[in-house]
Every structure is written in C-alpha cells, then in structure tokens.
Image 1 (tube, one colour):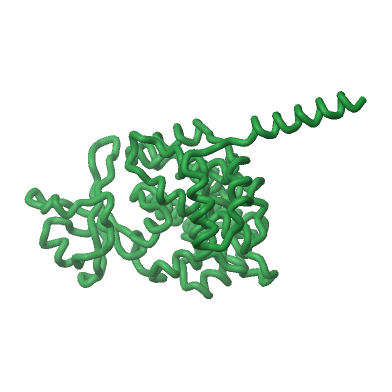
Image 2 (cartoon, rainbow, N blue to C red):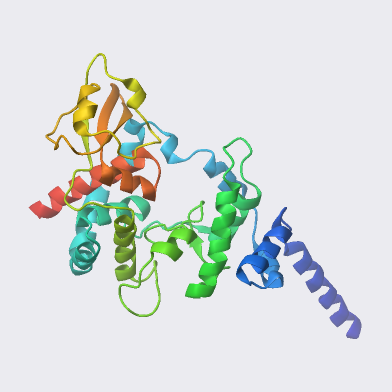
Length: 328
C-alpha cells in the first residue's frame, strides 16, 4: 500500500513538472515584477508556468483583418445583423447609453458601434486565455513582424496588476488572441487607465456590467479628445495636381486645416468649416482608390485601434445604426 501511495505521489509530481512550461525571459520578467511593483516573484513564476504557448496566437498576429483592403474589410462589420443588433442594443440600454453619452460628452451611436465592431454587442468576446495570449506575445512574438514584444510584456505586467486591483482570476480570464478583454475589448493597460465603475458597485466589470462597459468605452473616447457633434470624416475630391505626400494610413493626427488641404488638392465633398483641422487617408475600393478627409474624432477612434479601416468601419456602422434607430 505504501509503495502504491509513493508511486502515485511521484506520478503526480512528474505530471505537474511536465505541465509547467518554462518561457524564455520569464525569470527576468518575474524579477522585474518584484522590483518595480512589489509582486511576489515566486507567485509570478508559478503563474507563468501555467501559461501555454499557443501557435494559433502567433498565426493570428500574422494575418489580422486590418491587413485587408477596405472593400474586403467593410463587409465584415457592415451587415444587416450587426446594424439591427446595434439598434436593439441601443434600445435595450438607452438609459445607460444616454447617461454615458451625456457624462462623457460622446455621441451615443459611436459608443454602440465600437461595441458592435469589437464583440458584436457581447456575443464574441474571444476564446483565448488572456494569460496564454500575453505570455505568447511577450516571449514568442513572430520574428517576421515588427517587434512588439515589449508592448505585450508591458501588457502582461498590467494584467498582473489588474488581477490585484480588480480581483480577476488571472488563470481563467478569456479574451482575444491579442489579450483584449470584455465587451469593449480593453487591453490591460486601457482597463487600468480608462475603465470606469458606472454602476457604482465598487468594481470595474467589463463583462457582466453593461453600465461599466458602456461607460468605459465612452470614457476612453472622452479622454482621447472626442468632440461631440463634430465631423468624423468626409469623402474628398482629388485634383490632378494634389499633393499625394499628405496621404497617410498611419499619421492621421489632424494638422492642416480644411482650407489648406483644399489648396493642396483635397476638397471635401460635404461642407466642413474651412478652419477645421484634418488629415487625408486613402482606402482601396473594388473600383479604385477613394480619398477621405479625416478629423479629430476619426483620430480619436484610431486611438482605440490604429487602423483607418477600423475607424471607418466604426463610423459607417455608427451612421447606419443611427439612421435605423431614428426610423424605428
């Protein structure tokens, strides 16, 4: 009997050892967590040993939806079901959305559209353990891409701090392949910085509290400089001698005024005050390129996701939802 007990104990120990996964750089990470944040290095090490490298996460990073052309990207999010779902979500949560829109000075349709693009109003919040996602991208970031391992390492650290601050079960929390969480898909750093406790229960819950979700999205936009009631983007007519050096997909912070952009060959199709600061971006349509003047609110949406495709999808969806909501 004693031999059997000893054998089972040994098997259990060996099994645990096999399950623990060592990650390159994990020891240094645990030491940094202790030195900079006072976390128990042994506890951090044990947590990371429970994290699993996921090749599927690496693969997903190499083929993001934002790598598509606009004519391929738009139909992913501009669907009848997503528009109808947005109207339904707005109706069911009209008081909360109105409260958040007023408090944080953000247009309500944009709050709804971001939640719609991110998670289809909570239907698709991600099926990866956030611990696995952030560990994989911290220590195994794809070599063929521009190195963002430091960004994800910082997010992993913030994830640990978030566990302390909000009491999240770090081994169980699920999210996207990039480690984004909840209905608004907040990265840990954004969760720490911008999430709000709108329902006043003492916790910032981005899964089960629609008040906190809606308020946090609104606060994120507000903190990044949203201008309520102001334009987001408009199509531009392009002169033959337009200054194409002004066209950008990455630097969309408004600089030149609409008047200056018009002088450079990019004329707004819709009326916009001539002193409005803007930028110019280009989208690939099936029939050729289209050019757009983008303004402060478009830039704010790109703080949520840096892609102009994402920002345009959010804007288009917001306008479709607004029109349908008004007609309902």
